[in-house]
Image (cartoon, rainbow, N blue to C red; front, side, top):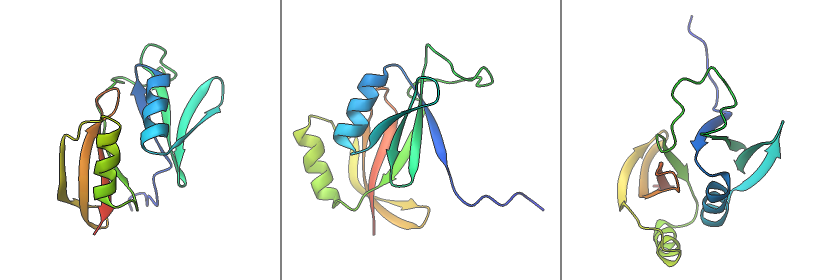
Length: 128
């Protein structure tokens, strides 16, 4: 029998600059950065979090290929995607593509894509 996974607890982002990452995820996406452990940080939203690892200060020696800018993440929002696009434009954050339809874990999405400060591809989407 395979293991039965029920949910994702956290994801780790390798970043170049904790402060630049905090500013983007708090100011643009409304997440909250909190400290934990021995000088570590995580971005909290809903009941999930993104743990942050600075590229030049590896926390776990078992991580083989931690690289800033290698993630491709999708975040679901209740903010209408047209408002998301307007807010991104007002903040001078270029929209890479969208709005456009995509397929999410639970059905169709209407999304826009942007880059975070490390050039991770960030999809912001409405369920449709």
